[in-house]
Amino acid sequence: MLNINEYFGSLSLMASLVAIITGYLNTHVPFLKNANGTWKQIISWVISIVVVFIGQLKSVGMVAETSALWTGITGVAVGLVANGIFDIKIVQAILSFIKANKSSKA
Image 1 (cartoon, rainbow, N blue to C red):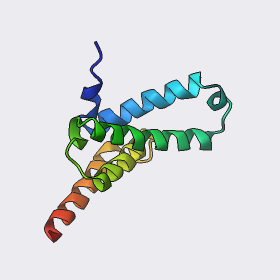
Image 2 (cartoon, helix red, strand yellow):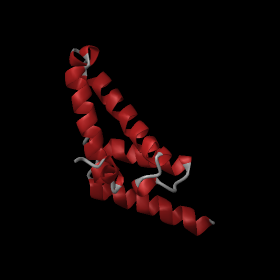
Image 3 (cartoon, rainbow, N blue to C red):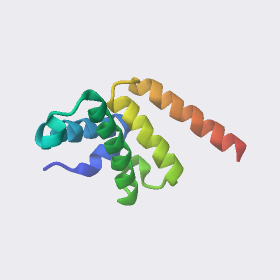
Image 4 (cartoon, one colour):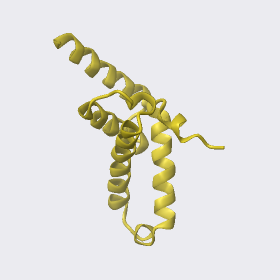
C-alpha cells in the first residue's frame, strides 16, 4: 500500500509527488490536455506550493513543524526541482544557507 506521508520526507520526494500529480492532471483533465507549456508550468508551480502546505496542515514530513513563511519557501524550492530548473543539491544548499542566516540573526 502506498503511504503518502513518506513523500513528505525530503525535497526530492515532494518534487516527485508533484511531478506525478502534474503528469496525471495534464493527461486526464480535458482543458490541460490542449494547454500550452506556460499553463502547464503554472499548474505545476501551484501544485508544488499546495502540496507542501497540505503537508504542513497534516503535520507530516519535513514541513510538519515549520512556519507558513518557511513552508512557502519550501514550496517554491519543490517547484524549482519539479520543473527542472534547479538540481536538488543546489536547492538544498540554498535552503541551508537561508536557514543558517535566519538562525544567526535571532
